[in-house]
Image (cartoon, rainbow, N blue to C red):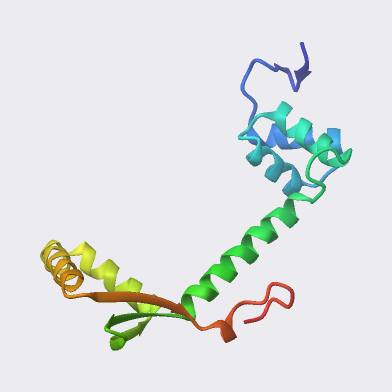
Length: 152
């Protein structure tokens, strides 16, 4: 059985010991080793296998940092789309009220948190639907987030 610092593989290792093992075996830095271990849910063998697959071009050839950067760009894009959207209450193509999406979400959250307002909002929604009111969400396309330049 493999021993490391007096412990067999069956005994529990600290996260630092696991990261050190990944660093030694794969020749990578702490951050990449920690990310690989987290993605493998603490399983050292799976993390080693994943890193080896990436190194040999069998798996995803992007580095872990690039994956995280892709997620960050996606979140930025989504937030940009939400922040440049409007929510409008309409009836027969006439706009009754129009608010920005973040304000509309904040109002909806506030109303939902108060039991008395929640009931009033549900009754109002049923009444609005029965009277042919429509809720429209529109995005202002000129302000969308550009992933290539990283600007809005």
